[in-house]
Length: 272
Image (cartoon, rainbow, N blue to C red; front, side):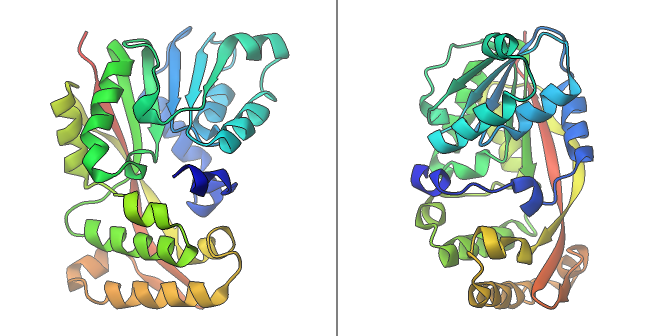
């Protein structure tokens, strides 16, 4: 997945309609305390750390970021440097260019591990291993916070299928092969099996899916690919049970398809 993300410099907040309220709720779930050490796992361009810095000034927090893409990590380093003076930035941040499954970061070191939309980037056969790695990194008494699109058994395969087709049309072959968006109960099951307790869904927030947001970021302005993707979505949407169609709040206007989904904020405690 390195090659895919090396060249994909986009603001996911815009694509995914993320708002300040969503980040506010993430911070509320995290319940950070002064001088804690936070790991931003699968940090990308540092959006989670950026929002934590904005909301927790003068708290003495230490931020570590781990990201497989050198390009995105360097972008995160540049953007986050705007929030702290040089000495404080040097002392309060650390950047690790690693695969999350091979980080070699210290065990039981982090008060909070926060992973925004990372889980689905790990192949299904390695997701249990990811849960165990999270458990290794969180200190006893600490917490893991996962931010994921919330999928249940009624919509999980539909969502996976349409995103896989988007990735295929965009030429993201590694994502086609490796991405696996989890059903919410599977996330809870894997984290529990790894040793976290309790594990649960702490918050859920509306997420408006919009197909047109992928026109320039994924399809490079190719309207034919957007058209093909929309037709694919329509074919699969109308194959869903009527009750499932109703709950998805479907709207098709021009070149855009909207669906009413949800973000979930999962929280998992490592027992003290």
